[in-house]
Amino acid sequence: MNASLMQPVMNNTRWRELQTAMIELKSVQTLWRTRCLENSFISAWDGEWF
Image (cartoon, rainbow, N blue to C red):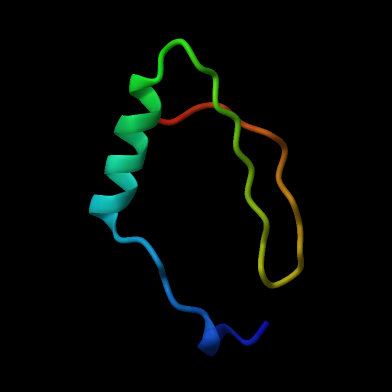
């Protein structure tokens, strides 16, 4: 993917809001992973929000 076409969709405030919301879900373990848009690498599942 052409890097000049990529645009951020979240700012630091939105990331902090998401982090806080996920930490407050104490009884629910939410897992997530990331995918690189340049080479399609997919990370291992993670559950840490700090």
